[in-house]
Amino acid sequence: MTGALPSALAPWSASLAALTPELATALGPLLRRLDALVSEHEPVTRAQGTPDGHGGLARTGRPDQLLPSEWLLADEFPDEFVRRLVDGELLHLAPEFTSPTPTGRTVVLADTGPEQAGAARLVQLAALLVLHRRAAARGTDLRVGILGDLSGTWLDGDLEDLLPAWLEARRRSDPTPEDVRHACELLEDGDRAWVLTSEHLAALLPAGTRTLTARPAQWDANGATGVEVHITTGRAAPTTALLPLPAPDIAVRALRGAAFRRAAPVQAVLPTGVRGGALPVFTTDSRTLLARGRHADVLLAVHLPGTARQATTVRARRHDLPGPALAAGRTGRRLIVLCARDRRLFPYVSGRRFCERGEYVVPDSAALGLDRDGLDALLTEPVLPLLVDDRFLRLPIAGRWWRIGPDGRAQDDGPVGRQAADLPYDRARDTRLYQGNLPAGAAQARHLLHGAGAVAWSTDRQTWDLVDRDGGHQLVTVREQADVIGLTHGAEGAALITVGRKDAVLRSAGANGRRTLARLSGGSGRPALHPTLPLIAVPKGPDRILVGDAGTGRIHHVIGSDQ
Image (cartoon, rainbow, N blue to C red; front, side, top):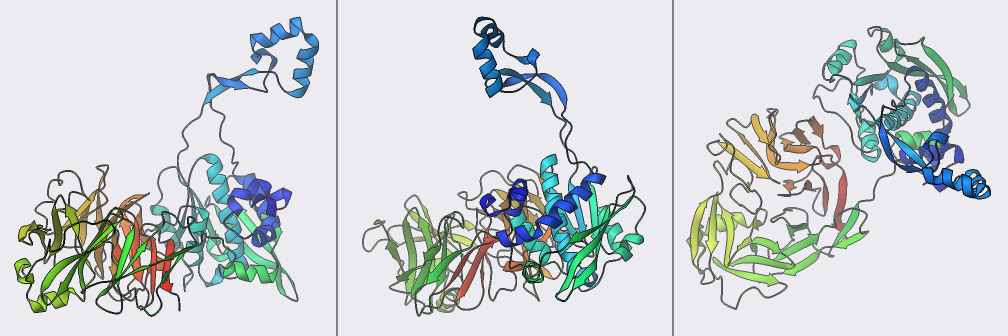
């Protein structure tokens, strides 16, 4: 990326990596001028800190920091000493400093209403790049709050995730001073907040508020070419400057998000003529996503790469089974499927042989509490998990674990969890996926979830106690019109995943507030959460599945038909 930028923008290469080279170059003059304006009000440099002895060797330094051996060289070989001095080869003791730990975050409160459309949004884009870079230089984070959003959700993370989320957060109405006051109440001690808004709203805010406003001030035949930017912080006199805008064509692409660079999602291809995506599911802790095909005796398996950069295309493997799949699971490189035919259950194995012919065959599904209607109903649902426990196969049916031995005998192995009918299959009793004793109150809770070492429980499905894998405890309140579909644990800790009953909007709710997973919302079927990784699979029609990060909403994999 650095080689594609002008030399004047080389120091910005890390921040501008989230943009295409064309947009980065076009924004260059605006970025540099805006950074200089912000610097007048808020220096970015961190204090050097308190001297704390020496921390190694360096090629530069004061004469009194030269090593004794270098002074000996000056006495014995003065010409060599002078040569090393000129070439910067002399060794010095490097001073060490104890730097104070940075406190507070850089917070942007962004006005995304109609009045900020067009040129003002471009200035906001440049301001986010400037403030993100300055926050990194201070050793702190940048968070973005949308004025008028009462959910308390912050946008944060890398610029390649933050910028598209900010762009998609447009609102239909302009914010009010009350919206700014509400957003400021969510700030923590030491936070440094900037309000990016209109001149009208900035004039109504209390004195001392850091504001940055922009309005078009120059035009040509193609549109606005310059903006008047006004900055006020209360510490110094307000600053007003005329800044240039990018050319209209690249500006329009930027405002549509077409000039943002993202890690390309992995493309996974389904076999021709097979309809997948209706019922995706992760059944074990492997990275294999399973989905039924158009026919009941077809199972599709997609092994997802670890990151989107590891591959460009992944093909789903089609398994033509001897009967409809009731349950399936991957153990290492082996896929084991429990098939059903005429109420008879028997295993299908892809990979290294697991059992002898005739083993693990259940003559009648009634041995697992399933009559014909119950079995037929399960065959229209997502494939059930199938786990290998020593020499037994285990699967959950109707809220209870069932164990099948090599002789085909089925045994009731205890409850999966209380009120299992109210929530999707929770893996509470599977010690492969949750280790440790349940916290006080969880064992008797009416609703119980486990995932990735975290546990959550509730008595009313509205207020949840959430304990992450490090033992941190928090209370999370879920909106009335949303259902909890699972629990995940990502980089920001544990969070509940909810889906709206009317609009199918996915959200994560945890210690850092609520975040809308906009790109994964609006699915055509039931989302599937991975039991140990922050992954979620969402069907988008009969031939497409999106797989993304359950914490940030970023899409990692797109699974679709090759037709």
